[in-house]
Amino acid sequence: MKKYYYIILPLLLALASCKKFLEEKSDSSIALAETLADQQSLLDHYQVLNQADGNAAEISSTDFYLTDTDFLSRLENERNMYTWQRTNIFLPEINEWGNNYRAVYRANSVIENLGKIQRNTANTSQWDNVSGQAHYYRAKNILKTLFVWAPAYDAASAAQDLGVPLRTGSDFNVPSVRASVEEGYSQVISDLKVSIRQLPPVAVHVMRPSRAAAFGLLARTLVTMRRYSEAYLYADSSLQLKSSLMDFNTLNAAATLPIPQFNVEVLHDSYFTGVPLSNVRAKTDPQLFTQYELNDLRRTVFFNDNKNGTYGFKGSYEGFTTFFAGVAVDEVLLIRAECLARLNRLPEALADLNKLLRNRYKRNTFIDRNSSNQDAVIDMVLNERRKELLMRGLRWADVKRLNKEGAGISLTRTVNGKTYVLVPNSSGFVLPIPESVIEISGMQQNP
Image 1 (tube, rainbow, N blue to C red):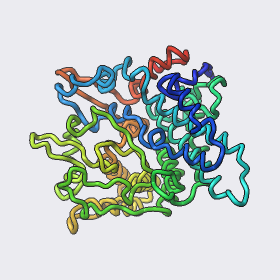
Image 2: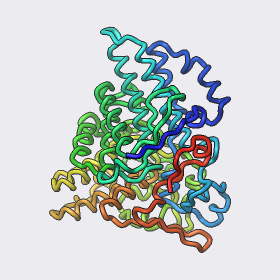
Image 3: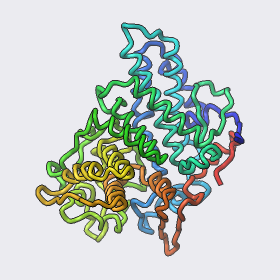
Image 4: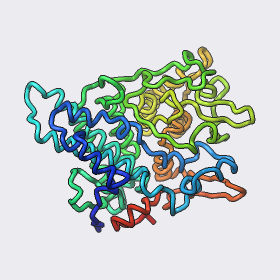
């Protein structure tokens, strides 16, 4: 396989600037972290590891649209991303690529520091927990980077397809390789399997990862790879540890933000932000909204009626105007249902689907879904996945992998009378790497 070598300058991938990087590195938080408690503190940096999930996948998908007026009010890079342009879609200093590798750097630092701390009978539980968290965060951020800057996983070409750099150490003087897609997903799987072995079943708080979350994230990884038998096993393992669902009948749908943060479905909490995505500007795709039946409580729990024929999204699991990007029971349940359907275990798939929907419809109005046709059940599950998991940054990866299944999903947006289209399996589904990264590192740009 042809590999592309380059020297990754430390400051580009880790942080926004040299000064900021050096200030953080010299600030005892990383450079002087010696004890297990120090390592845990590094991983409890909520700003770096929980609230810096990127919004590129969501802006690039079509869960929402902007009016022409709102589109013109946005920054040039946001307008370019919204219309799938190939240049200037990321700011040069602070961008999603840098945030992802900043988190990877922190995880790598902890893993290396643990090599200097003896694991013994007195600290085994804490040592393993910290190690499991670090491997989880490294996997999570590599996976996010693959979703945005690599093509959909295809077993026939993954060994040749260009993926993303795999930084597994904190020494920035070590040359990096833009690994293949196969190598990237293998690294994610390997890290998550380590975290599954080491993490506790349930964390002290969902701001920290747990075994249930790691099982769920691995299920997400494998379903994206279309390895459905394995994805089923890990989704099932996650649900064996935690499977509680909110009953939407108990929520105040009239509230500005009906769904509480850290609710019973959350396995691991993280989120992304973005001005173009605010419910004041982002209007829900009308074709998507009409798919919710009248007795489906998600019509009012998820959406705010703007009183002008449009709707804004208010259903974030963050209980705020930010957007949930973590791992939750509803997603894992839908992964298991889809995998069961693809494995032709239709009664079990329908049981999972009906369990979710009974908690989403008005009491005593939901009629269980039923079918003996495999394709019909798969379509049912995918339709509910579309309606349940919107505005979580997942649709982009879903479209890419479903088009590999032959779904033929095109994305279309119209701005100022001009229509933009992404056709299935086109190179437009792989975003260009920020120009600042290309200029300094010399790595190969995506076409």
